[in-house]
Every structure is written in C-alpha cells, then in structure tokens.
Image 1: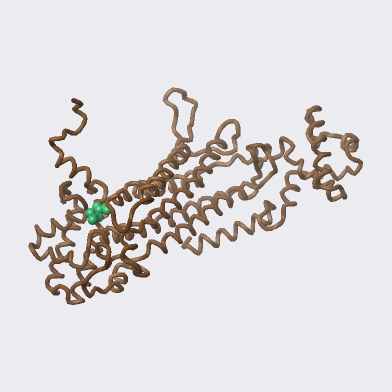
Image 2 (image 1 turned 90 degrees about the vertical axis):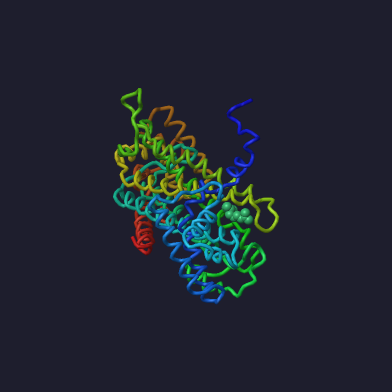
Length: 458
Ligand code: ARG
C-alpha cells in the first residue's frame, strides 16, 4: 500500500480536512467579525435580540479579534471555516447567548458578505498601486523628455518616437485598468446580508442599516443571486489578468531593452540578480518574474470561471473554491505593481544609444516617402520609390545622408537639396496631431497625465 495516500480508515478525519476552508479563509477574520458586529447591532435595534445580548456578543467578537491579532487564537480544522471557528470561540467566551448571533443569517450570506468586504479593500489597494505605477512612468517620462528612440513594429525599427511617448502608452493602459477596477468596485459594493441561506429571512431585518453600517452603496435585489453571485470575484480576476498582461508587456520590453543587444536602459541593481556561474551577468529577474507570474493570474481566472460555469442556483459548496485563486491573485498583483513601479522609477536611460538607434536602419524611410507625397507623388508610388532607394542604399552601404542628390534623383526627379533636412527630429516634429509623438503633443500628454494622477491625490 502506498503510505503517501490517505488511509480509508481515517475517512472521517480526511473528509473533514478535505472540506475545511480554514487554512485559507482565516484571512477573512476581520471582515467576518465586522459583519457579525453589524449584524448583532441590527438584530438588537430591530428588537430581534435584546440589547444586553447584542452587547455581550459584540464584546465577545471584539476580544476574539484581539486574540487572532495577537496570534493567540487556535484555528481548528474540524470547525471547517472561519465563520464556525469564530462562532465556536464566542460560545466559549459568552456561553449560550452566542447562539443568537446566527439569527436571520446563514453562512451563505455571511461568506458572500465577507468576500465582498475583502474585494472592496483589495480593489482600493489595487487602484492605489496602479496610480503609483502611473506616477513612476510619468516621472521617468518627464525626466527624459528629450530622449528619442526607435519605435518598433514586428520588433523591427520602424519610426522614431520619444521615449516619453512610449512610456505614456503604458500610462494609458494603466488608466484603463484603473477604470476597469472602478467598475469592478461598483459590482462588489452590494450588501448581501438578509438573504439568508437563499430565500431571504423571516425576521424584520433592516438591510439598509447593515449596508450603511458596513459602508456599502446598496443592498442586493435578489436573495438567490446574492448568495450565489461571484461575478465580482471573476471581474476582479479578469481585470487583474488584463493588468498583469500590461505589466508583462512592459516587463518583456525591459528585458529586451536592458540587454547588450538593445542597450537602451540600465536596471538598478535592486531589480537585477547576478548569475551564480557567470560573474558578468545582471539578470532582469524582477521583470522576468512579473512576466512569469502573469501565468498564475490567468490560471486563477480560468479556475473560477470553470468552477462557476455549471452551478445550479443558489449556493453550492463548489463556491468555496472561489477564495484561493482570488487571494493568490491579490498577492501576486499588488507586489507586481509595486515591483514594476520601483523598477521603472530607478531605470537609467541610455539617451545617446537610443538616439543612435533611432537614426539607424533607415527609420526615416516613411518621412522620405512623405516628402515625395508633399511634392505631389501619390503615397503608394512614393512608397515604391523609397523602397527601391533603401535597397540601393543598403547595397552601397550608405545612409540616407550619405546618398548624393544625383543618386536620389536617379530614383525620382522630385528630390531636391531639402531632402537632407529630413532628420530624426524633423520626423518627430512632423507627427503633430493629437496622440502623435511630436514633442509638442507629448508635452501636452504629459501635462494631462500629471493632472490625472494629481486628481487622485498625487
Ligand atoms: N466555507 C464556506 C465557503 O467558503 C462557507 C459557506 C458554507 N455554507 C454552507 N452551506 N456549507 O463557501
């Protein structure tokens, strides 16, 4: 017999361990106690339990919170979950009256409440971390306003752009992330207590008082939905997946840019790790881990979607599986945002190398085509001519600046002396429509971005 497998004889115990959620839902103790205190208050206000009883219950709950926070509470697996652990301890402390707390309540609406309180806090922290990340991007962009670099498509040098413009692209992504988490908050900000196990409760509860007491914007409209809705968890994880995807793209670019091949940036030592065998190496581990951790966040999203997909209304125990992936997502997302913000904040830009790269590889080809267009050539024709010109220049091993006017003219008679005025800077300046990389446009974009973060208390 395989000793590593649980024995059948211990079936009872292993089933209890199998169904228990206490190893992970203990982190909801604060939410659970806050919910119970509000519930006890409401029950006494409504005359469902006596004031004295509510006082005893509330005092008991407060002292349990202290025990937990001092690390003096012993969590018991056989009591399954955080709700039962706290309730059992309340019995130890205040006796039979503890049993009155669960009047007009079920663990089903209780766990929904706890998770919503937790989600609301996680969302606020996420938004704060996102704004911190935006601020880091903005600081780096402002400190390197004049830095030009090649913009890429297909990872081939395409057209020159300002580094600030590139960084502001990530600012925009983060801004949409902030908005996405904001929507997520609206759906989490709904108070489910009073739904009971599924059908509502047969006591004159005051749900609005509970909502107010616990800081919720509104109460749930349908008891069946309230106890079985985990959309707010899914939305949080979906929004987190998108944010991680954004961070991962920046992480990937950081890995590339900090390589000797690109040499565009240098990472602060705090964000690199040496190799145990190659003394010269400074590996971009933080960026790589952010890129890598994106996988587990996607995985948790798939997990919860799959858990929920075929559940009949209302509560099913499957839903206990909503927590670990959710917590892990929070535990991955917040540190990733912080790490990326720190990495960006301390990034050193190699401005010279970036400018050099921006001028190389015929990145001004589009500008030369635009030049011919301004002289009346249809764009498609100009594109064809410049394509040939680039082929010829490559063969000759010459840059655009090194081609003679007669060489230019052999491709198109419209070329004149002013073709030599096409430079990286003229290329940037030309892209002067809203959203473009012209220094003037980027200046305005930086201002707008600064206003956005300042409005959030920056
Ligand atoms: N531990 C449970 C969960 O996380 C709490 C709700 C239990 N409800 C029940 N009817 N067994 O979902």
